[in-house]
Image (cartoon, rainbow over all chains, first blue to last red; front, top):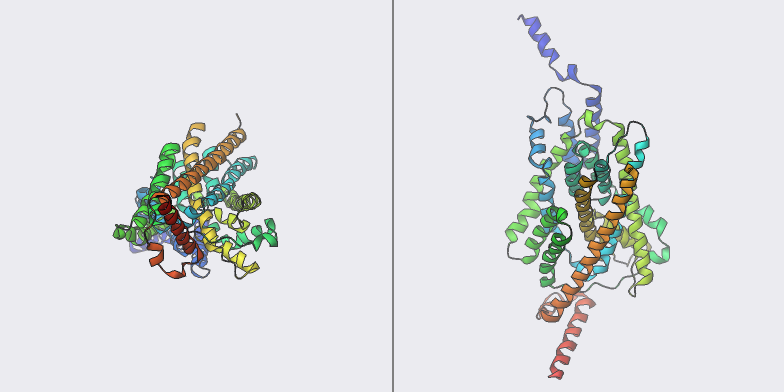
Amino acid sequence: MNIGRAFQEFWNATGVMNFTGGQFIMIIVGLVLLYLAIAKKYEPLLLFTIGFGCILANIPIAEISGPEGFLGIFYQMGIANGLFPLLIFMGVGAMTDFGPMIANPKTLLLGAAAQIGIFIALLGALVLNIIPGIDFSLADAGSIGIIGGADGPTAIFVTSQLAPRLLGPIAVAAYSYMSLVPIIQPPIIRAFTTKKERVIKMEQLRHVTQLEKILFPIAALGLCIALLPSATPLIGSLMFGNLAKECGVVDRISDTLQNALINIVTIFLGLAVGSRMEAGLFLTFETLGILALGLVAFGFGTMTGILLAKLMNKLSKEPINPIIGAAGVSAVPMAARVANKVGQEENPHNFLLMHAMGPNVAGVLGSAVAAGILLAVVPIML
Amino acid sequence: MSLIEQGIILMLVGITVVFVFLIALVFIIKLLSYVVLRFFPEKEKPAAKKPSGGSGSKDAEIAAAIAAATAFSKR
């Protein structure tokens, strides 16, 4: 081999010579995600790691997201088998205070109502099949719908089990819309409530004893074991973390779950999700459909939560501000903060945050339950 | 059965089960709270905690005091 030919071979192996158009577009998509994370601070922990993973996954020749590449190894390690989302859920459990929900258990219903968006988006995905170039199976539709759960780990868990090929677009849609909750929800809240309803003050929540907080995770897991074993990976992890926090004797475990472990797993999970954003998998017509349906799921979830809250306000003796219904779409604690903010715009002395935390954490349970139903029923129907 | 029909079935099953599950949880929490507050009330703790806890904890204290008084008078 002469020197000229050696340079020729090297030139043929450069990135410049091997880029495909799709990879180039996806690297720009990765940069946009980094921009949203760094400049706009939209879910930075996730969009930063996913965005960088997306760039790495679309480098020609290096095959970073292939089975031998390090992102591919992360993917096999914890996404393909559903492990990472469960570890995140343990951390979420250790950070969640179910107190406001225990103090006012009625708010659980709002967490249930806001899950209706999931199933409307599911149906929407099947309807989209009339568009040529889109072919969603029931399993795909279920995974797309779960975006409406507004819960990243749950969405990733369900998708990794039902429709792994759609993991990239679904995870990106889930986390993007979660970060857009402050933009998506307020107009919907205002559209479906009257000013009179938005200024409603709620009675202060009672004190919840430690014993109640310790018994709750065990009782909730017990119900899940009895009714919906397919949701126990999610609910079990959540309650493991929560009991570790509330029992007060394993602070080291609780501390690790809500800090070190969740941070490490977030790095792995974000990069591995980014690795599913290869041009071939991501640049499809279906991705556009998924992004649109995710928005539908969020919008309907917010709406149904609010509508049930309005109904409960009419029927219940104690006043219920319908704004808190919007917090039923998990996205903890962002949705609760949004509810608080919209309430304070009408009346600066109205503090809805703790009242909205009830439906908010109920939404986490609700979307985990919805996930369990999809995991239990969809494989049978296929 | 068409895909849409399956979707509708899945939707109805899903919404029903989510509501059944969370309504069941409402009753479990209510039962739990009733049993805990009735038989294992926190001793003195709310009083020892920040007095800025608001009327909620004070109401609880008053309720506890009334409960204690009635229990005492029944003897």
